[in-house]
Image (cartoon, rainbow, N blue to C red; front, side, top):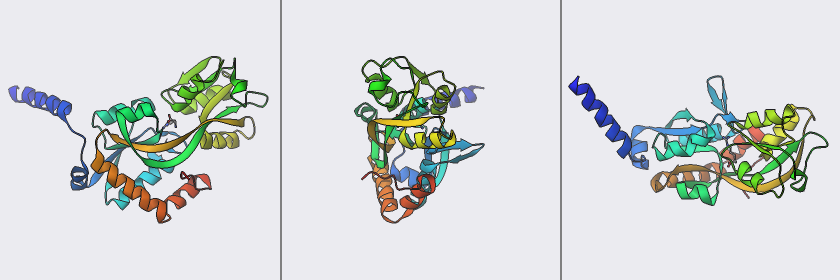
Length: 251
Ligand code: ARG
């Protein structure tokens, strides 16, 4: 009994004093722990029990390059960077745009793709930032879409959803006038809905990167060099083409 209590206390202490795993510790363990959301097609998607998507395939290629196995964790988007602070995994790949605010909390890798936030609406609906005045807009919570839609002068009601796919559904069911989300996700939505919605203007551009715990420079260096190799040896181009029919690297 006494022993069990001691063990629990020790665990609690360990949990609160745990440090981010350095590159040496990760390499030594043979496995890298990666977190994503799993609800952001075509970037990271959980299909049944299988994680797929551009970022999942890319991260697995980087791990292979680094000689590591992968242990995946999925978390709601809004929790991902918090879990990183708590050392629950080594890095996050979930389409985070590099922003000054996020860069205060985590360290970002070099970008693994470049994109933007685009407006999507039904025909006759808002297609430009100016059109959004007085209109209701659906966005995923905790995202750069929310941050940027808030800046649109005169924008109407902004409705936030835990998942991006729920924000899209709100547009389709007519609960909002527009959805703002990733440019590539929007292209897929337009295709899937066979013209029931149209993509409008880009509201903003962003560079997307992986995040490590603040200060974990040894891991960051290895991730950046694996990404650099993938960008140069054809691996990145192949994966990007598989998901987008084009190379979406930053240029
Ligand atoms: N690019 C946007 C941002 O940086 C959205 C990312 C959403 N990612 C996701 N896995 N749901 O906030």
